[in-house]
Amino acid sequence: MSVLPDDVDDEAAGPDRSEEAASDPVIMLEAERIAEALVFAAAEPVSSSYIAERLPHGIAVDAVMESLRGLYQNRGVNLMKVGECWAFRTAADLSFVLHRGETEERKLSRAALEVLAIIAYHQPVTRAEIEEIRGVQTSKGTLDVLMEAGFVRFRGRRRTPGRPVTMGTTRAFLDHFGLEELRDLPGLEELKGSGLLSSRIPPDFQIPLPILDEDGLSENEDPLAPADLEELGILTPGGGSDA
Image (cartoon, rainbow, N blue to C red; front, top):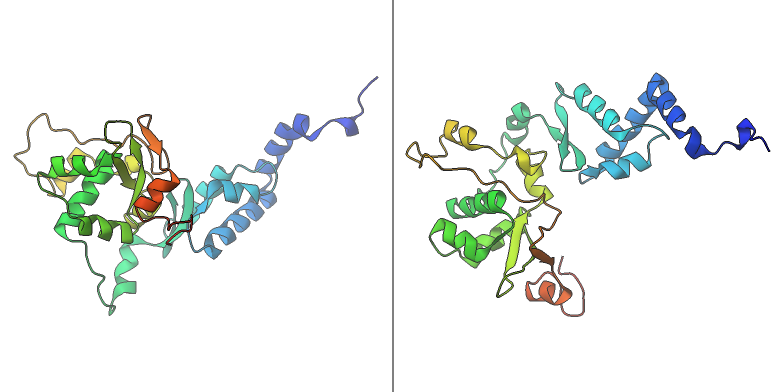
């Protein structure tokens, strides 16, 4: 029995339709308008998967977002990628205009910045490891400040004796510091050039790289159980969140 053209399923015809949609300027323009509206209307960065679900069939979300990013490159607001999400942010060279006359936000203390830097570069990292790197005890208040700012979160439990809790950075950390992903953290030469590293550092000194992105667990970590969340104050007894 021969198969009529109308009987061809959508999956078989998918690649051709996808290519046709991607090459149609009218469809692409509509896709860009949809993506632009979704990101503009959102209070938080919007994931690529969320956008892709709402684009016309056959349109690649990455192509649409990169086209939009180029469109906003020299505008007052820029389209930025934060992890696997997208958000509009004020152009870096214009931020002073918005903050003029406003009360300056409280800056992180030197201790908090040191701890945040250690967590960012060494994650997943435990409190004991942070203290070993810094050479001094880390107060709970310093970690609380970073948690309240939304820059740091508990990740899991290390598969070592004592099962210590590990910490890592959040998507809000990437967003605040204008980073697309953890690989964009400044390297050794950049830190030297900015004066953040002493010129007398050991010749074999290397900048560590985080093991995983902000959402994953490494192979030597286990996810936090409900009891862990209660102990850490993330969940109230009975399963409710404090947030």
